[in-house]
Amino acid sequence: MCLIKKVLDKKILVPLAITVAGTLSFPPSWDLVAVPLLVMLVCPLTVLVMMRDRPADAGASVTDAAAGESDPTMLTDEAIEARIRALQAELRHLKGTQAHRAEEAATAHGSRNPGGPDEPGPPAPSP
Image 1 (cartoon, one colour):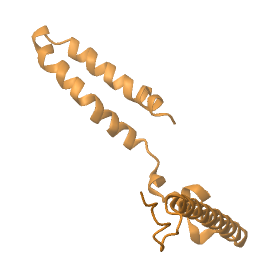
Image 2 (spheres, rainbow, N blue to C red):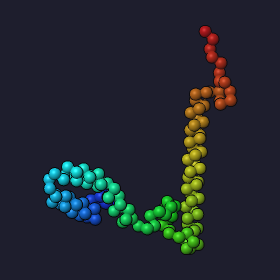
Image 3 (tube, rainbow, N blue to C red):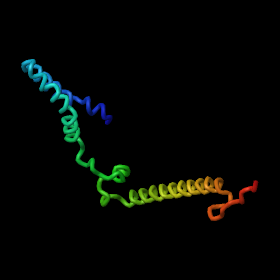
Image 4 (tube, rainbow, N blue to C red):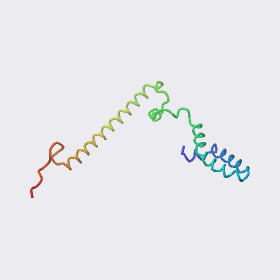
């Protein structure tokens, strides 16, 4: 859910509106103290409400969330094999990317030093 939708949720806006209405019922001299206090408390109260509404398993690891699994011990053999294949494909992709970047770096390094990394390069022309 979008953060703005969470902040503008009725669970947050209704208590805030009730608090503002209650503050306005006090004498006007109290507004000088109450309004800055309300402004200062809006953020922490919003965070507390959002934390309370958070699902209990939100602390699951990224790998579990990506695979859609809550308990790895309850996976079927097919799910395990599919996850292994996906991880192997990702590993092949990352190794290919790494090799490509190493090749680009070697090419860039070679263009700056035509003699290669271990050789000093061609001698400088004499004047």
